Image 1: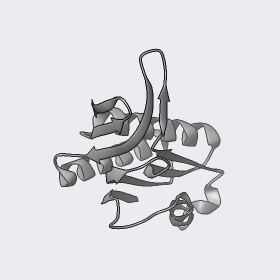
Image 2: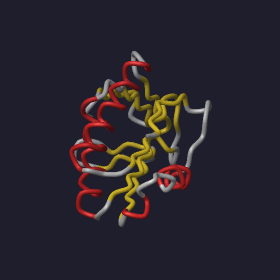
Image 3: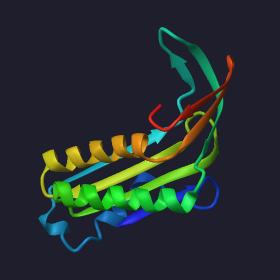
Length: 149
């Protein structure tokens, strides 16, 4: 598994890098699906409550090592639960601007259903279970969003 919490400018990964990594798994010949996800900074928030132009987003975690360990546990659990062959997750922290990547996931599995289900669970558990804080600076001011937001 490739699982990392990375300060934005310390290392750089693209979705392609994660795909290349998971394809090196010894069970790749049994695989029939790869699903990927890239979460990035949205420049505009348009909904009933707000009409924001996002200038900057600061993403932090109070304990990088603990968050890394918890992300590894999520990956192990998802791998076991869905019987997937390989998983790679990169989650950045730091200061970001519109279009910057925050979160990359690639999953290799035998069939599309369990592989897609594993991807969806990885995304949701990372969003809701890990201790991240987003500070959004926009034309409306400053807003703090805790895990799950």
